[in-house]
Image (cartoon, rainbow, N blue to C red; front, side, top):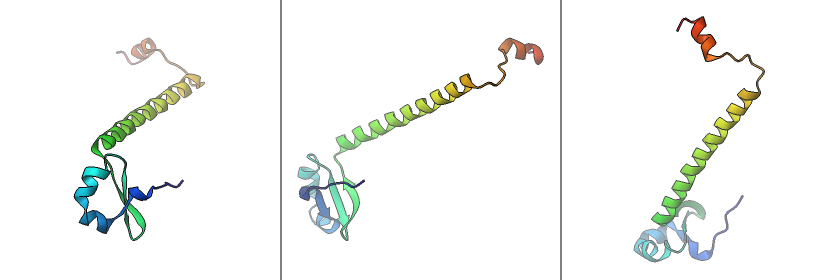
Length: 96
């Protein structure tokens, strides 16, 4: 899966060093800046608000995946032919 870049989104690491203030003030708010080194993507300069939104979305996705995994485990256990023991039975058995 490849990423498509617009020409205005691409900057060399050398150009970024020379004109960092320009990119930080004007360019980042509109779109991400892809920083290339030797014609290879090395980093991405992202506006803080966009970064914060992406980080929150990632955390929400991680939580959702965890809930899905737990739900699948519960469903598997409910369908399992394993012997079910009541809490009262365990209390009597182990004199609790």
